[in-house]
Amino acid sequence: MHDFLPGTSKERVLMVYLTAGDPCVNGNIINILSESGVDAFEFGIPMAKPKYDGLVIKASYRRALENGATLEKIFQFMRDLNLDHKIIFTYFDYAKNIGIEKFMSYVQNAGAEGVLFPDLLIDYLDELDKYIEICKQCSLEPIFFITSSFPHNLIIKLARLKPAFIYLGLMASTGTLLPITISRNIRIIRGLIGDTPLLVGFAISKPSQIMDCVRAGADGVIIGSAIIRLISQEERGSAFRENLRNYIISLKRALEA
Image 1 (cartoon, rainbow, N blue to C red):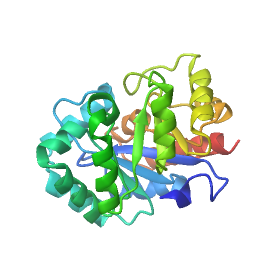
Image 2: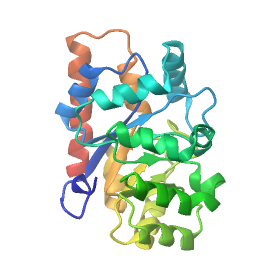
Image 3: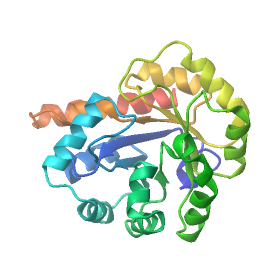
Image 4: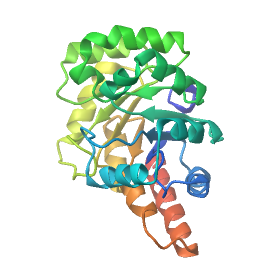
């Protein structure tokens, strides 16, 4: 995964979050996003009671579950996608119910490069070593989700584990408004992790926000709710496709500004 992240390339990373199994997510949508400048995709596994997701993503989970999404269908969908970079997002307690080793083997077989568990370091810190070991066994990249409230010594430790990237969640849940303290928080994390790639997300939707994040030291952004809100529109004509393309292009330009 490192070949799309800083260290081998000067380009900033635009990653898009989509809910796997959401009927609004299909090959045509993914092609438009990819062709317009999206570098990597994060696919969330729908569940009835997500911990940190906002209203827009929760609604996409409901659509997916009502549409008959199952883990088997989701991983088949992932296998069928011809994408350079894709990761999976879900909760560690969900994977534990399936069996961590079994779940991670599914991830590997689906062609994903890693799996991000946002609750791993919050609720299951004692299982960090196990996560790292299984990643090695399955040839997956470790990825860590943190918030600015994490202990600094833990963040430094995570960077030393050489993850594909560290994902800084800027807010308590997705789709909310960013406060002005965000730039300060990004600068602090940047100083702690050195050259480890840093992506930021949760509540980013505007090019101006992206520019602020990059100036503060982010290597890229992850956009979720804003994209899902757009693709969940019922009207799917040429104007919709053009609006989606233009939106992605505006985000990519902000990254490169």
